[in-house]
Image 1: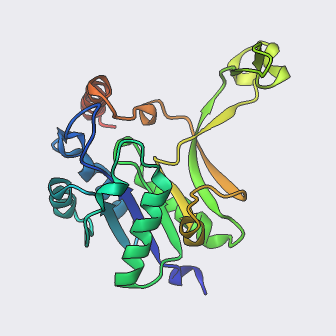
Image 2 (image 1 turned 120 degrees about the vertical axis):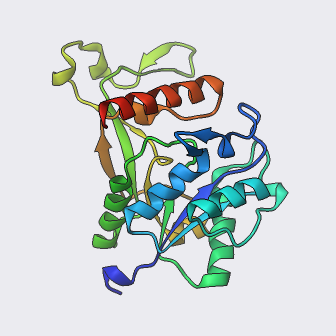
Length: 237
């Protein structure tokens, strides 16, 4: 199968029962419902054959469809609870989509609470997957030069790496990369069917983007996002 024949579906999970910010997925921000941003990013990437929003909410479904998403079903309530993991939601959505529209080779996973993504990150992730059949996952990761600690079994605080004890200018330090799959990730559909979304053989799209760290879960996050959007509009970014 050549690269052009590898069908790609974007899956955007958006449940209706948010506790931190009720109704957040349809709340207007930047002149459109929150869910619309991720739908439009997937469409603008130019690499998604389908853009599916999986939701239990008729209101979110309507907003997503208005933005151009494909929403052929409503998610079962058992897969839309507060502590429901993302993986079974993606598996359910992929299986239902394939039962309607045939098999897909690549799944793009996007979180609707991440609106400061660039569509070209999605494009790059999918095209990288198409070019290398050995890859299981390609995802965006933010660069950081911060030090990290963990509490060991003996109760003592320890550095994640010993070299973090050597301080110096950030430009000379070895960076770490924070996995941000909700911003943009391309995943083999076989992995999703197994109930996983990050494989062992991966490629990372390195970014250093402060705004993309705004993940909208509460009222303060929403305020930060609105302020950032206003800043970008004023400055033409």
